Amino acid sequence: MNATRSPGQQHPIHARRTPVAGTEPVTSPDQHKPGHRKAGRIGAVVSALVLLAMLFGNHEGRIENIWLIGLAVGLLAIVIGDIVLRRNGLRS
Image 1 (cartoon, one colour):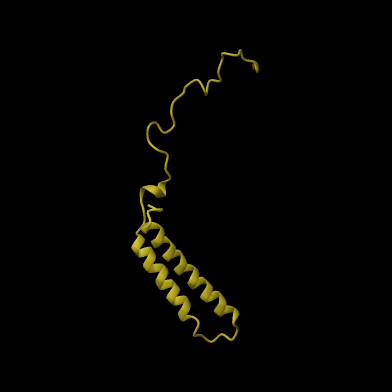
Image 2 (cartoon, rainbow, N blue to C red):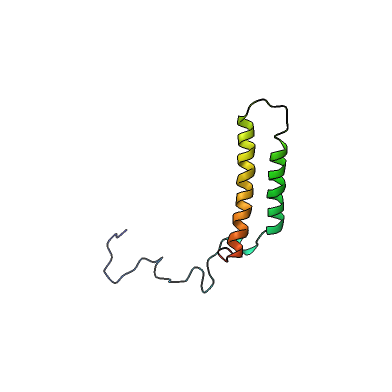
């Protein structure tokens, strides 16, 4: 096999010059089918409430309470952040 090519000669793969996507924008499959935002928000709020309800259990340590409160606050912060970003037009 001859490894040297003349300066004007291209590799056979590059000689085709066919566009991969043509004129369509390249997107991922999850961008074509958006989920239900309202159902996601309701699910996150319900999950946060369930986590807070777990504070009233039969555990003795405070570390569990810190984790439960932290996770609930994190979920609610994500929901509130999503609402604010969508209202300001920073997310579609």
